[in-house]
Length: 194
Image 1: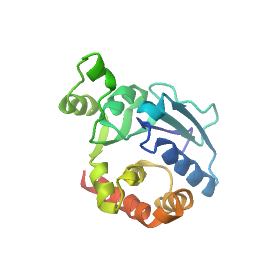
Image 2: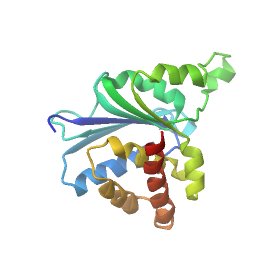
Image 3: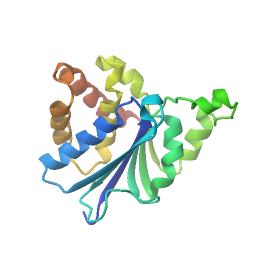
Image 4: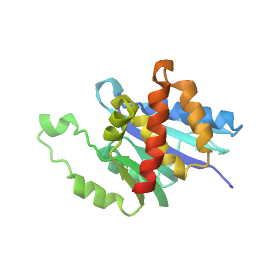
């Protein structure tokens, strides 16, 4: 592989975006890969937008420029649309089929695009759409949806799935290792069915 493989992870505060990026970073360290990362927390504690940039084997800074991401992992349907301009023309996107409407929809009575409109806008990329919330609940905890997303996205990453799983085991709370292991594997299985 030449150049960097750039992954942008986006979501809403509280969805585990930062943990997901830390898992990717740890996997890179396990494989002795060069990695750079940066995070932006936009009022994350209040349900604001959160983005994490992960650049694997890159030579330059940690931020991914618009139009340069190889892979977008979005924990929310609306956030996928909001950040899709970061993808390359042949970019790939893994997105949770759920959507959290911003408070502006309620407080300022602004119109939000429908789920069908969002999905239609994302179909110009190679798209994996899955119900990560349901899969996480089936794995044992709705809080593991971020690991479900990593499991699904692992099919498109330049990292070994076994390494990613080892990274999950190292970074999630000890009492949740079994649930998160199952969540990762169920995410990988869901990718094959999309």
